[in-house]
Image (cartoon, rainbow, N blue to C red; front, side):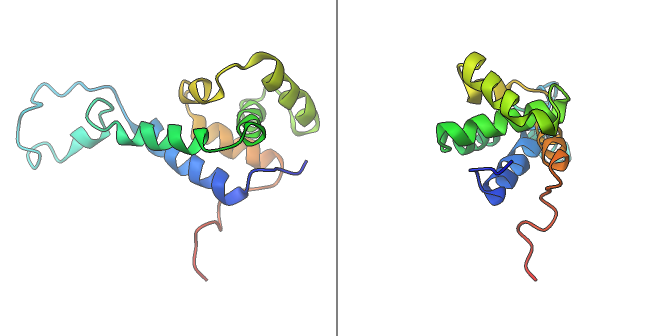
Length: 133
């Protein structure tokens, strides 16, 4: 399997997905209180910080169709729906059955973890991406 999407781009999506996955529904009863008193927990509430979702959506939308399909297929491998030897089958499922890849990915719980597991199935990781040596 050779990806058309760069590992750097994929890792950028994983970072954004981790930020997106960390958001929680807004439940702060003291929403108008002082941010310092709340220890700035409001930044994790998804109703007050839509930029994280917008950045993830934009990162996925900026990919071409083949790259988007690969991201989705990696998620399927990471989820265990397919294994690494069934890569072509996973890509075919995406082509045949997924109409809005971005929306489907945004609705996938634990997307970052699933993508990392998908990469690991191919002995790839984001460990050394973005580090300066």
